[in-house]
Image: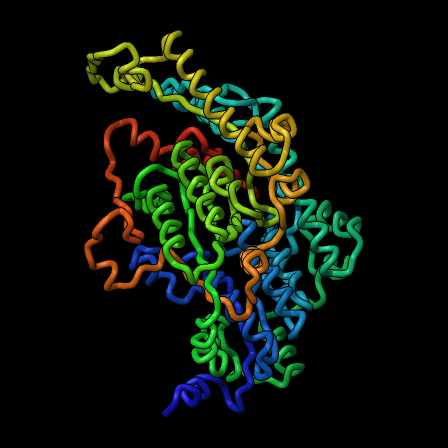
Length: 563
């Protein structure tokens, strides 16, 4: 039996297919490297799979339409935003419907509802709600808690908006912090409201009426034009299948769908030029990066540089898509990555940076050397600023009944030690370093973005922007997702997106993984497992669990909660 016959058998009665996307079963942006975690997500779909399969299905005459179970799936706003864009693009070719038992239950589910509006029809269960009540951003200051256990945080920053330092060192929420967070929330909700109004064919004012009156009963939401139908899952499916001349046997999850001749088409595409995808995910660190014992991931500058050097050796690679999802970290590692990006550009190959949920501080540093930057409207970016400091643990040791005596050889030997606070000379040295790093960051950002330093400085000071506001201020070039970034890379390299081949530099074959590398020019994706070492490291890990990680001088606040 041939490949085409096998594919035909996998599809339904006469070849008709009705696609399903069930977010309740899970959605992941990237498959985890941990085999156990990957097994647990066996029935989840990846955004990359949705991207590819919905693009194929939109052109497949056998596909009748798409039914989306639009519920919260634990993914951040930019991921939900991109999935909504993919559904909307598919809907330009095929009918679509979205449903949920409830968009929030006496609560807020603006992002799931926003995704649902990408479909032609939106349903909600009679007993459900439409909770689109805006966004709540939480600011957490940990100083009081740290001091209760005998830890004194000492941090310096450049400048007032670099609130990652505030999370540890500030006693109260500053005006700058409150201003920045307020604007972030405003920007996120304004973009959501504008998108909902456009998709639903409503006025912005009418959507705001629904936001401010939320949570809405199904009837109220229907009166406002926010939902089309009220009903249960079986009624959604009955109506859709009847309208599309489908049956239950025709249902197929998007990630289980295979286009006829899909493998053949994939093989044919390999004859075109290549676009290499290089990923920067997690906190930015020097060296190889780490897969920590608690599952955290960091991006090592050595590995990113290694992958970009591999691009330079491959003449078939015509462009690079730099895929970034990082809150930043080490200043020198970020600068190393930027230099590697510039070397690729100097070889005549364009680089387009695609920002995921967050590409801020060091993440922005790594991106700013690219030819163009693409971000989602809700991406957190910017944070062009610097912080550094330490936790003084003398009080903690005393509370625990531990004795510690530090012996220092050299005037600055204990500068960053947690055993004692900064001296006046230590603070002077720290300030000198912060000024130097900040001046370098802002001057290079101004150069890369084609701005005067004073113009860039007004956008810096550690301030975090949404992708939408960053685009308005010239910090990014385009608002869109992975597909737009790929298309821009192809356009700059004079490639046809339909025939170019995507090659992921981090994907190393099994045989290549098992072979020992022969030099630093060998490509791999190996990282180290970082052990837990000492009280200081435990404090950083504990902070990460609270959403307060610090990876280096160019770090964004650990997590911005939006509810």
